[in-house]
Length: 223
Length: 223
Image 1 (cartoon, rainbow over the protein chains, first blue to last red):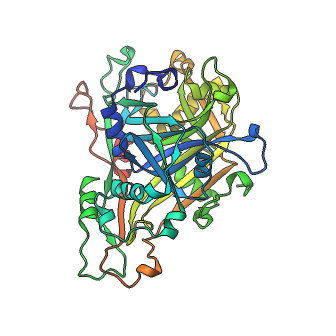
Image 2: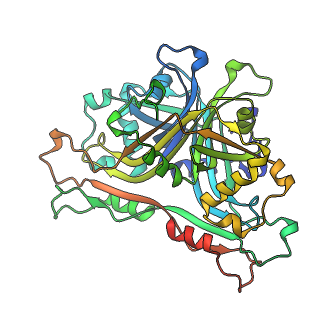
Image 3: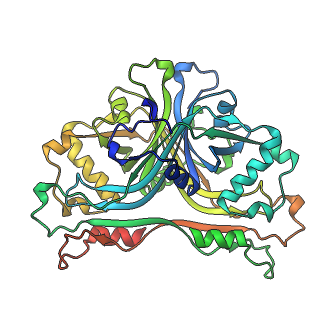
C-alpha cells in the first residue's frame, strides 16, 4: 500500500496501520461503507458541486471493493462518468471514558480507500452481485433465485481498487493527563461496543416447516 | 426542513421522511458521523481536490450538529476557511433476507446534513465540549475535570445547521417478486442488528472502591 501524501494520516499518525491484512479485515467485517463523491446539481455550475456522503452496501472482492445500487443513483452515475471517490468503513469498538473531558475518546478500526472506481461490465455483474450478497450472508447466493436480465439491467456495480488506502486504529484504554494522575477517585476505563444480531425473524408467509437457512444462522452467530 | 433540490432523495423517494423529529432521533442516537469535505493536497491545484470522508464524534446541539477534533485536522481547517460539507449518520437495523439475490436489502435509518459549518467561538467552546461528552455519556461532564486553556486551544469545534437535511428509512420485511411468489420453500425474513454495550472495563489504576459512575452505567444500559 503506497505511503504517499494522499494516504498519509495527518493527525495522530501513531494510530495508522499500513498492512494490507488490517485493511482486508476491516473491510471484510463491514456491512455498510460511507461513500463520498462530488455531487453535481442538475443544471448547476461545477463550482456548485458538493462533497456528498451516502451509505452503501459493500464487499471486498480480492484487491477491489464492490459497491452497488440502482443504475439511476447519483453516485453510480458519477462513477460511470469517471470520478474520484473516497470510501470509509469504521467499526466502533468502545467509548473511552477518561478522567478529563479532553481525554475522552473512542476505540475504533477505520479504513479509507480513495480512487476512481470502474463500472463492472455486464458479463461480470451477476458474479459481483453474488459476492455482495455472500459478503453479508456467506452462502446465500446459492440458496436463492439468481438475478434476471431485467434486474441486472436495473443495477450498477462498481469496483474500487484498494491500491490507495489508509487504516487507522485506536485500541487501548483511557489516557490520563499527568496532572490528573494523583486523583484516582474518578473512574476511567472503556465501555465496549459491538454490532450484534438478534434472532432472525421470518416473513409471515414462510411455512413453519421451512427452517432458518445455514447462511442466516451463520451470520446470526457471527455478528 | 426545506424540500429543495439539494435534499430531495432521488432514489426510492418513498423511503424519505421529512419531519424534524425523525432527524433529531437519528442524530441523537449517533456516536459517530461520517463527514465529507473537499480535501486539498498541500501545493496541489483545486482540480486535484478530492471528496474525502472521515469519521468524527458528533452531537446534536439544538438546531445544529457539533463536530470536533484537533485544531490541525484537515476537515477543521477546511471548515475554518468556510467550506461546504455533508455529514451522514446511519443506524443499521437489520439485514433483509429475500428469496432472490436482487431483493436482499437492509433496514436502516439514515440522515444527511449539508451546509457550511461555522467554528464555535472560543468563549463557547467549553460548553460545546460538554455537549459532546454528555451526548456520548449523559452527565459525564460533571464527573470529570473540565478542559484547560491549553486543551481548549488544541481543539476546534464546529457547528453545522440542520436547516438542509434529509432522512431516509427502511423498516420492513423482505420484498418478494411476484414471480417468486409461489415458492415458499425459500426462507425470507430479517436478521435484526443493533450496537450493544458490553460490561464496562476499568483502567488498572482505578481503586476497587471507585464504582462505575452513573454516566457509564446509564450508557451501558442504553446501548
